Image (tube, rainbow, N blue to C red):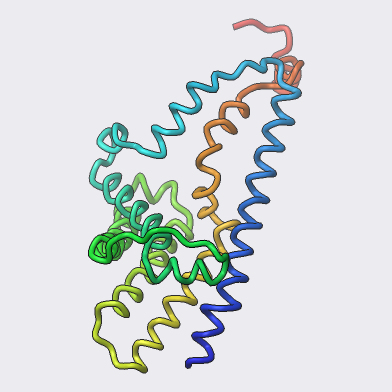
Length: 234
């Protein structure tokens, strides 16, 4: 068990982390390249960057949006994401692991605060799953991974909290810590290849969407021809 745990926190962690970074860089680079190409051929190249920045921050910090639709579900989603972002990067034990892999460290959050955020994630993940499962409007737009990820992301939080606060025997601690690390590594590997990629694409998504609605020169006439409406007026 010790050998497996050392492998999971050593070579496998470094591989998972590198794949996450390189894969994330790839999808961001491709998105920016396609956006630049679309803008280069657009008939209208005017972009209100100020509005895009404001809109991006309003989605990154949706203080005003959460209460407009499904407020309870939205609030649970917000605190779930806050815990998922802060604990992996600012828990003292995690920072030590990051330092082993990258040689870089930073200040840690208080353990009590980390525990509180972890408990929030443990309860919020299943709540989001049930919200999608039992609400018809959510089911209509949900795919298989939309149900899997809230539960999958809860596993590292649950196993990590159990290892830190469960008073486990040495053997039980190693077992649950191994599950914790393996699951976290798997999540890092999946980030560039699943909907989890939104965690790195979100800062540029408003720019991509804005440029995506700008048509190429002559696109209007081609749409008319395709629809058989050429020369018609409405």
